[in-house]
Length: 187
Image (cartoon, rainbow, N blue to C red; front, top):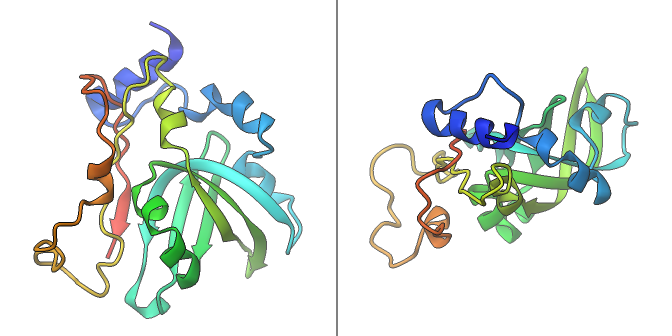
């Protein structure tokens, strides 16, 4: 097995890996597109524009945040904390709630020792992530609705509508192998 394939099999079997992070296998392609590792945020100046990419670890949309969503991305070097304003959330809801790997272009904001990226544009990189194993297996990540603050617990009030959920739109080629990374979507 290739190293990428071993990572895919680890995620399929255990939901995590002690081997390499999935992103080093994609780093050359990301660098060619001007996407820097998350560790570059440490040296970035306040207000600088930067593009980072990573696995979506956490999506949070607290009820007290007035519609602001917080997303944590992770690559092989560090994490990036994204702030998504409600206007961008409305425009890119499908990408925000469905992506397992995401690229964010935005502005660096430093406050109280914490570094955030104020998201300006987001790109779903799930298909690129699926190429890690070399056979385009799905790297599936269970995700929540992301707006549970307005609808805590209980059944989805939109369930009666004939609307497909974001994760139901993409149907992989029914490969048995898939790379599963669990995201934590807080309510």
